[in-house]
Structures are given as structure tokens and as C-alpha cells.
Amino acid sequence: MPDPKIRVLVAAEVEHFLRYVGVPPDVEIEWIAADEPVPEGDYVGLLPLLSRRVDAAVLDRLPKLKVVANYAVGYDNIDLETLRARGVSLSNTPDVLTEATAEVTWSLILAVSRRLREAEDLARSGAWRAWHPTLLMGMELHGRRLGLLGAGRIGQAVGRRAVPFGMEVVYWDKLAQPEFEAEVGAQRIESLEEILATSDVVSVHVGLSAETRGLIGRDELARMKPGAILINTARGGIVDEEALCEALESGKLRGAGLDVYEHEPEIRDCLKQLRNVVLLPHIGSATEDTRRRMFELAWSNLMRGIRAEPLATPVLEGG
Image: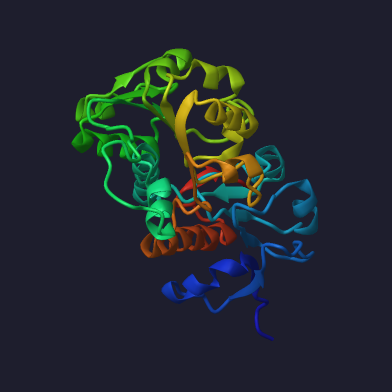
């Protein structure tokens, strides 16, 4: 009688990338769409999207689970304490999406500072009549200050790209980053209030946690430099969107560029109606190469975890 298969649950949305990896003969995949509940069963591994909450209710349905291989660098969708208590391992996908996310961050910085959304709307509408000296004047980046909230992998990649634009780079982070400082001439500012008050462009690169949820609220937006720009490609819950709408409507801020939202995929009407906001549908890592590498890394962790081998990029080591 053949040995029973090792059963794993994998997000159906990543099936496209299965061609890039090998499936061991003793592994059986069950695909699960993001809008489907987790089934009960003797599944040993789970590879979910960021949109799937993995908590006690899910783990109650998966008593044999050994590993969760999250298809994301962030893991705010995971109940860490529950996984730890039940000895379930957790991995994420760091490094492989750094450059792609930094590129999208800079796409937003350029689009907002030079009012590209408004410019394209005008060009497409047929209402543009002639060149004019004061038409859609934006903010020149050369000589301005870029403030990074968080100087991890992505924050540093964004900061490196500021050098050719002639921007000064400052950052706010719990940990000093001496190599980053030496590489780009960045300066660490320990006061959140100071970095907000002195930066022309503020770009958010911290993870979402109980400590950072609502980090940029009404008071923090009020402290920002008049005419500054706010960029968020990290997590929507870090910025109070209602307060952001008020700051944009009042003219306190020049504009904002967002790739993430508090209640994805819902986007507040006020944000959609404002012309000085550029909105993207969470595409920070959306390049062919990056999404493939994310899957390859998540799959490698899944295969390691089901056999109780060390994970390539562990967040929690269970067992």
C-alpha cells in the first residue's frame, strides 16, 4: 500500500508560478481561493496570501499544521502568539521584493511631486489648449529632503535612489544604520516630530504592528512641513486616512501617493475624489520577476517546513 501523501494548502492565486518549482511525488496540493474558508483536514503546510487571516480559528481546523509560508514580506495577517503556542513555524519573503517596491515608491514620489495624474488627465481630455508658464507647476526634488520612516531593506533602497535626484536623506528608525549612512550620506533623526516637520517628502517603510498602527494621525500630519508630500507603500493601517484627507483638502500637504489602504480593497471616497492624490492597487511588488521569486521562496519554505527542516527565511521556528 503506497505511503499517504503529505497534504498542503496553497493559495489558488499563485498557481501560475507552480511551473517554476518541482513538486515532490509525496506532496499533494489543494488549491484554495482567497475568498474560500480554510477546510478542515490533516494538512501539514499552508501557503496563504497576505489577505488571509491565520489565527486560532484557522489553526483549529488544521490540527496537523507544521508551517505557514506567507506569500509576503509582512505578516500582520498572522496571529504570531497562536502559532508560537501551537509550535507552528512561520516564514515570509524578504529581500526578493525590495527593489520592486522601491521602484513603485519612487514612481509615486515623481508622480505626486510633478502632478503627473493631473497632467495626464488634461492631456487625454482634449482640454489642453497651449503651453503656459504656470501650467501644472510641481515641486522640484533636487535639493529637497527625503524623510524615511523606517530604514529596513525597502527604506534603504528608496534612500539610495534619492542620491541621483540630489536629495538629502534622513531617516527615523529604532536602530542606527551606519552602513546606509556612509553609503548615501543619510542622517538618523530620533524624533518623529522633527523628521515630519523638516522633510519635503515623507515615505513610510515600517511594518504594521500594534505600535505603528495609526502612527501618522491628525497630530503627526499637522506637524508635517507645509506643502510636503506623504508616500505610503508599507501598510494602510499606519496612516489615518480620514486625517490625511483633511490635510490634503486644506492644502496643508501638497499631495500623497498611496499603494496601500486601511481597508483594502476598499478606498475612501475622499481619496478617490482628490486630484492631488495618486492611488495604486497594492502593486508594490508586482513585477514578473519579483512575484515569481516570492513564490519560489515561499514554496521552498513550505517544503522545508513540512519535513521539519530549517526554514530559509524564518519568522518563527516551531516544533
